[in-house]
Length: 354
Ligand code: OGA
Ligand code: NI
Image 1 (cartoon, rainbow, N blue to C red):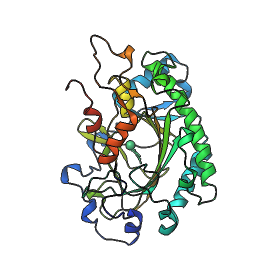
Image 2 (cartoon, rainbow, N blue to C red):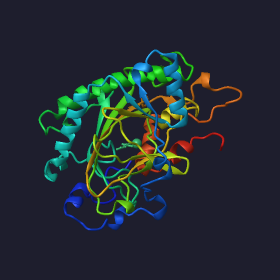
Image 3 (cartoon, rainbow, N blue to C red):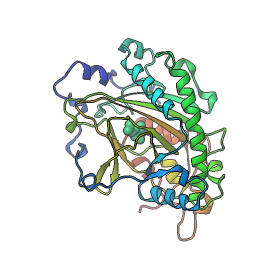
């Protein structure tokens, strides 16, 4: 794989801070990809499900709620998820402070397309691609053997400790959620974890996204339409600024986040493992001219060196295996070359064209 970006990296935050009155051409999306701000769906008040996890954990009715959210939306919000609210606020605050540091300080952590670890401003190595209006910081978190402390920011002072504490709480939440998702598919509670490669072997990474103010938000996107490549994603959204949109038919629904909620979504690997019963739904991020936005995406992934294919019990005569197995490291490297591109990658594994 390439070791450098195809063009010099421009920090979108610095660009935004220069006060440019128009969006440079590199960020102007073709007309059919530009955002729609007030879709009919969101006007009609359609929203992704909100689940109170106290009504879900260990309750048969809860499993049905999870199943219908995953089948119908691929997304849901969780309240009473067990992650400490003040920790959520502090870790998001620490990242906000990180992005406020001078560019020279952040550049010390500049990332490359090999591992993505560190501070970056583009996804994918396709030359002349239209870029997204955001910067990010990407860290490997699990298995702990791949953690690289020299890639973790050291400013603001508390940030490393906060990342670690937050990561631990979210990891536990993902383990619990994996059992619930397994049962919601009619499988034994530990089946899905086994298929992901086992509790101490799964992978996880954290991407903090920073969406600067944008002079012409109608022409660009903070993050282009994509589905998440991994297992499940736990998103800590900005507490004040909305921006995440989820595909609903031909349109998009803007998520209104509930205070202290975490947003869960199904990734491509879970779509594959569930043999298409659960969908990794496309989503994108819109930006705005008045407020910057910060979000933390925790990606919980299968062990990277085993083939991931549909779980045997979910393959039947009426529902033959839909996807060919692939190792997650291979899958991820394909995604990393192209950057966000809708659902093309998972669709390319389909055995029968639907
Ligand atoms: C992502 C993502 C959404 C957001 O990082 O994959 O979809 O609201 N983020 O930042
Ligand atoms: Ni995503």
